[in-house]
Image (cartoon, rainbow, N blue to C red; front, side, top):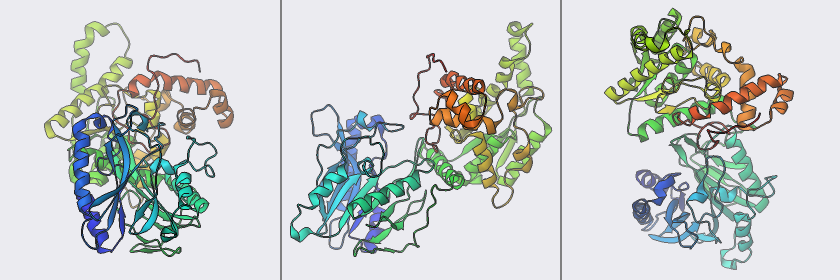
Length: 548
């Protein structure tokens, strides 16, 4: 409510006729099973009344804002996802969302009653078509394959021809969205809205949510597109923004904003991933009621990148690094971690685990006697480290950020209750090769991540001379295989033929992915930046047998 009031007042100063806020702005997207709590829905109604009051009085802008309202139908759903138009202190229209997505991270059909019909609205004497997010994502001229049989915008445009002469004028489509970010989503969204505007010869204004809720990151990038399909004005990426635009005459002029930026076929994934993960980390930590974070620093590239992201998200004074060397840790690993901490300006402490490991080994000697040093001893080390990190978290009130990447999580090259311990998997949706690219981006203005960290061979350092390639293919070979199987569900034979690798290697990688499902379902929430991340958008059974 604070931000809605703040931006409404700013819009009033700009003498705006209408100020738009995103989908479910009042209660947040997506509230999930909070929607089943009557008190939650009642509180949303109370806040809606407060928002409506902001429109009362001479010269006040109308407000279009997303919220949840009780259902009106008899299909067993409790609530509706609505865009509420308020003007002169009154609710003029509650436009109900018609298309409820049910793919990837979306599960709106679980909660919401879909609209049966929609109607044009009038704002300050001008007709407008009001839609909510997915209702604009079913244009038959843009999508080769559509998810729904109906197109709400097409139906609304048919109503335009029935308007009385007094309401005739340029077409204006308003869309309030909570559209999460993933690679290339921003450019695809822009092209889709451009095609929609051209098809209906309309000006389209889309306002998108900014911020992060759990695993989902919302990039903003709100845009206004003219009837020619070209961007008239565009808000910032991953930042809150106020975009003031004159929609008449047809050649609109953005007010108080720079010239719209040119877009490539796909945005710079490295830069956008950095911004997304910084925003995701900041919002997760703060929305969970914390201020500080702890990162276990091994001297490796993964923990270095997580620490660099955390510093930008939370400030160096709120990030604590902890080194936990064992008898297998190289001298360079400790010195690299120390140098990283100095470069970042964060606190750094060393808690050696050699003695603790010896105590555990002694206690387990009756059970381990006569067996060679192996996986049990290797996994014991990260589990000791995990216990130390969580003890420090409990004592200091700082959240532990896990440091595992997508390649490791995919193949199970991680330890449950060990290096997987923590509250948030910051880079859990970055393949190892992407970790290197983002780490180089972190050094764009000078060395933050030490050069030795970037160049040395990756290793878990759980036994003498260990290298990641002892257990996994080189990451430049592994990552394309993982992307094809995780994000495209491509069969082994197709992956092998396309990438020029042995099919048996591909099958071995796919088996690793399938066998590691039980680990991933016990992992910390992963910040989503790819088309298909580990989490609620990728659902596989744990106890299953499938021939590759």
